[in-house]
Image (tube, rainbow, N blue to C red):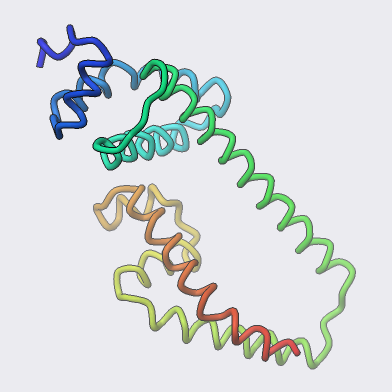
Length: 189
């Protein structure tokens, strides 16, 4: 492994494209600390930064045979981290806007009997769709939404990676959105 530390970035990329895990490890060792600091300056949340870095290196490994790096590896990785941090900010802004709209809606609209009935039907529909999720996905989703546990807390309880928890929650939300979309139209028309 010490030999890999002496290789240039171009040599490491060439070896990485040939499925060389030691080259990947050398790239990870060479750039993880600097990328962590780069991301943490812009986003001072240790867990989120670690998740971003994990996603970046997973992507690098998954795309190793087809990855197209123009310029230096360091510039490629720094640009990728910057883009991932910007995506986090964009997602947070969307969440904040959504919460604000929900608060405004709650403040300006009073529930009527008809709305209460629709809400009960919607809750029943959501519960039914959640119960039809695969068992592990259902458990992770319920721990996230019903028990209000963080991804890290769920990962510790189930002894799995926080990234797996995040992926399972995202997959369950995609499934629920797809299943509920048609029902919502009929429910609220």
